[in-house]
Image 1 (tube, rainbow, N blue to C red):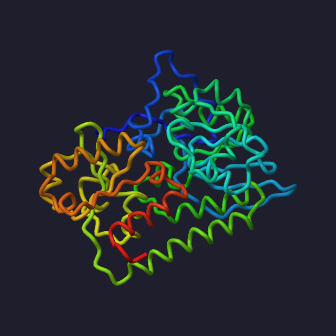
Image 2: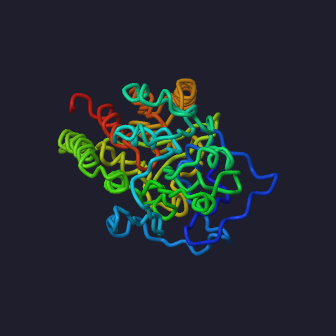
Length: 362
């Protein structure tokens, strides 16, 4: 895995519909390849979409006459005449959030469902929801054929026309509103925090007319964060590096929501956004020697399935046998979906990492 960013335009909602991708458009990245680049990469502005705004959340959602809602999202306004009746979650994390907000009857499709299973307690609710896109975001024709009126994505990558996906403009032309997780907006990826999840919950509460239910879910998640904060308060932060391993290629993560998750879990991150290594991107490829020199006491890593977790553990233990993190068996795996912007998994990742870094605190 390298830190080279694919050329993926950031959508804006006021531009004319983007042209169809060329016949030789680049294929969609497989889920394992997307964990760093696709799961919220910084997306450069394309010529067609060059006028995209830079605001992240803007003012709170505002109801208009007749139950309409207008919300600022990724620098543009998302406008709906009423609650969605044909919603699609473009990633399991977004589908999960819609299900937990009681919107099963409003969901007409779930994308990338083969990339990562839903949590067991909501999986049955999604059993009859059509799957589109398999392990990758759905092709343009497949998404449009589902006739959604609301499409909810973790990042702007899911609307990259050059990958063969439906653009925001094409969806708008078909009558679908688009909402991107706040932390997945292009200008937020480097500075995102777990707090972005609560912006999304507030906005979804307004969009679906379920502010009370969204507020209850927010309160539950904040309760978990407060519990962890109290548990690790006063304890010595553990020197921790967050890595991603693909084959024998090693990358480290030093910015974005991933960095905030470590801080909230009681870690002393080896890498941070103030380092030159992360001046332009939240992850960077490094040599094993460079990581070994930092002597982290713990290693956190995202995985997309059991095989990837085992392969990562094997690589880390064989490559760094003398590293304190390996010698002390502090290798902490986190589901990759928990590291996607705007997911409930952000909160569970904080707790999982805190429990491993500070045994007995929780």
